Image 1: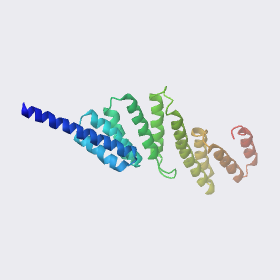
Image 2 (image 1 turned 90 degrees about the vertical axis):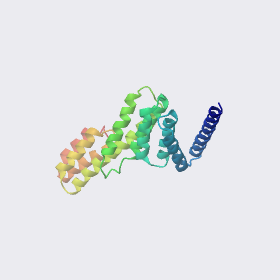
Image 3 (image 1 turned 180 degrees about the vertical axis):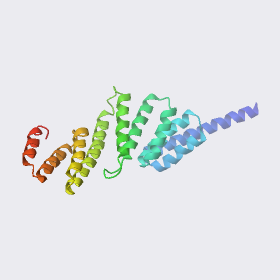
Image 4 (image 1 turned 45 degrees about the horizontal axis):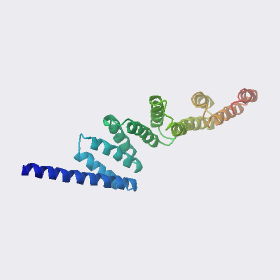
Length: 219
């Protein structure tokens, strides 16, 4: 009986220590001491593998990593949380945070835009998965616009580069693609002006005027 009593007492004491440790970790997080909080939540995960506590700590770990701009790590932690959590609301929020991580990991328009396209696809998948939830819609719409503008700008700059080098047919290919896929972006008007420049450089004034007349309602 004495052994059982001591065992129970030790277990109770360990629970109290764990509760205090978690409480302090959350306090660090709320006070924006993300580096300290991140390390503590990682310790909780390591010491409580396979438990609900570890899963909840994973969510906070991912938040800390996001705030520390460790977006690759944050994305992976949120993915792990989505895989194991039974909390529907937090799982949804974690899926949204994955989208945000992918947004932050996109590169400048001059560089490869594979990550940009994947981020757009991820946002659109999120919208399709939660069609009735308007909570995130405004922010997602704004971020998709930013990403699409980045893709459009890359097309536009490529077109202008070819115009400057006198390769007008190649320039038209890029401007055509911009007007086809990104006609709703802020660079569509620039692409139309680019087309007019090509006509004028080729001394095709009538074509330039016709193009302007045909597209006057699109500016």
